[in-house]
Length: 229
Image 1 (tube, rainbow, N blue to C red):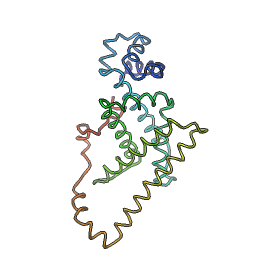
Image 2 (image 1 turned 45 degrees about the vertical axis):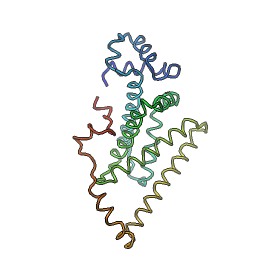
Image 3 (image 1 turned 30 degrees about the vertical axis):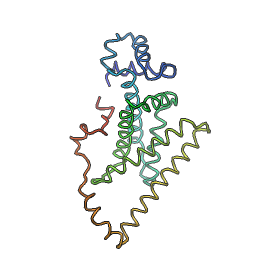
Image 4 (image 1 turned 135 degrees about the vertical axis):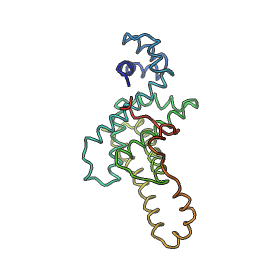
């Protein structure tokens, strides 16, 4: 984001708990920053919606920076995923800002934006953790993690336990559920009968490849990383 965009977003945060991610918040933020409304609307054409997405991308960038700075090599891979999801939630800091965004993206006109934002977060987590999937697993991993992340966020919004410990316990259970599914997949792969029966479908799935890096920006699930501007 540009410096002006950052200033507007920072100024908006104190208004969001009262006015939500809305045009009223954009106007108030512009007034606080001394930025004319026309410029503010040029930076955030859809007003509060674009500001909410910018706030989400800021959280993604904060998480990515934290993951890059940490040595996670001593952790099991499932624990690295759990750590990344926790780092992303903690990057949000203020639950009311997230709650207001969740309410906004629950509205039918903006639901696709919310889904793309969550997919972008899941993609960034897998990429940051070094995912090298080159087949249909590229999609299933991100779809599964999107479900884990979104359900954990919803749990966190209603969690009043000390240090949100109940949320992290919930996250561990969700990750364990995913790992159980992966173990079932592995068992099927090792079973000669099941492997034979599934040979046809697996051959079809093997043709599915992740999008090329140059093409991802054109895909519905793509979210531009915050550092790209």
